[in-house]
Amino acid sequence: MRFVDVPGSLDVIRPVLNRDAEGNVTRIQVQVNNDSSDDTAWDLEFKSQFFNAEGREVTTDTAWHTVVIGRGELKSLESGCTRPGAVRATMTIRRRGDE
Image 1 (cartoon, rainbow, N blue to C red):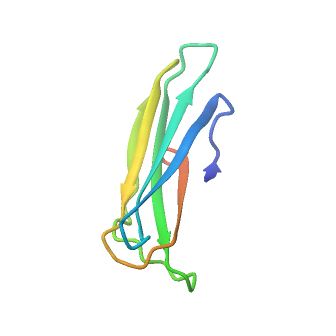
Image 2 (cartoon, rainbow, N blue to C red; image 1 turned 180 degrees about the horizontal axis):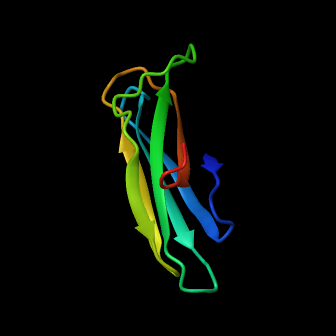
């Protein structure tokens, strides 16, 4: 997990990697909770990267995806990889518009 300029009121509840029968990572799913004490909703973007055993990226979806997480809200962020050989995955979450 990597956070870029993300508010401290966001908590990662449970990152999960799904694997196929051959052991390839096919999906990363992360649950994020906004436990802010005020009514702030966070406008975020997330992107996942998948890597093979040699450390080369095998990501199939390179787009940033947007999500708004309101106060007290729990959201599942997920991305998949259709290329075989992924053994590791990471997810980057940032405020929308940061680059």
